[in-house]
Length: 213
Image (cartoon, rainbow, N blue to C red; front, side, top):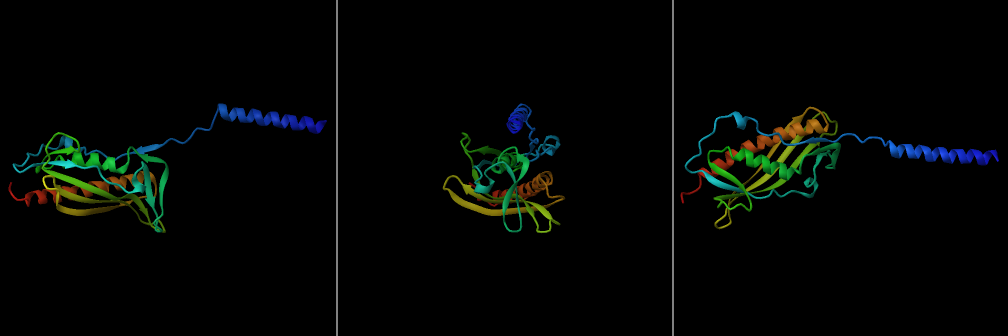
């Protein structure tokens, strides 16, 4: 009889504790959300006059590998294994973040009169297509050196005949101070800015080299 009473009390206690965990569940850790930093200097820098040869540039959607389609902050180890940091994410997937970043940055070029997206009514003079190759945090075996890496292949196309004018891959790598999501995003931000700076110079040179129409 005592054994039955003990068993009954044990069952009741278990049910009561389960009910408490449902009523007061353990809160999940907060998710840290990161983005590509906006170019604050563009709001304070003097407006650059547009060149007489300035052209309208159309940005095509950035193609992305399967592993970079989500919003996870991706890191990779020496064995080329991919994973994402827990409780941290990008505000959007890397392709969309880069697309906004490119539009804002390239619009400052004196040789680009406007940067438009696909589907606008503006008649673009040039089309810029791109493929995202890397947008991740690289970890070394001993973690003594970790880097944020951004790599993109760009294709400059003449929309009138669909011919390729030029293509180039830009890869930038910036050391991260620590192996965590915050330091990873800081390094990737810096690498993105360096990549866009080189892209702008390359585009401006390509535009200067175009034959007169």
